[in-house]
Length: 179
Image (tube, rainbow, N blue to C red; front, side, top):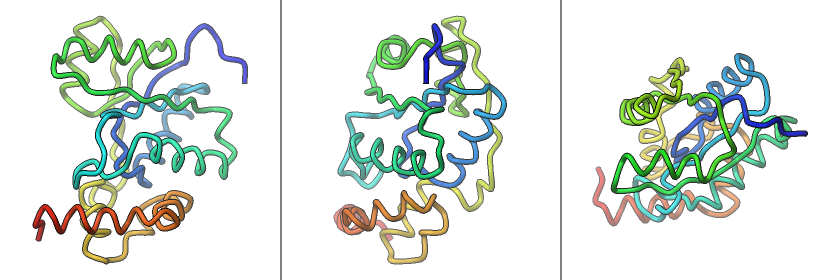
């Protein structure tokens, strides 16, 4: 893929885990914008907590495996961005860690405000079966040994199981005393 002077848009999220709703949103953005799209993995410095169980490297690998499996790896650029306690600084970090972009896709109100204040167009993403595809609920299902695999793309589920990350989530939730 030859990258133009900038990607068409970035899609920002924590992706803890990257689920079918995220994937439907990414495909929707690709259809609307055309490639290349940058998938910006936020909260890159967090891992090993009930809210952020996966490392940024694990998230990159599992998402890349799915994109490659579906022949989309040449249409999406993966990048990662740490959070900042100073919200106004965070948008500069996004611009520093991601390829140059024209637009931002996010449903997070704070992200929308921060980029709009910088004069960058921010567009919302439709929710795709939000009642099923919510990362908090998926992590809970994993932690409680319930069925969750159908809620994430196949290569994501395979990765989580292959590296026993489901076991990590169970331990993290147990230590948090989540019921």
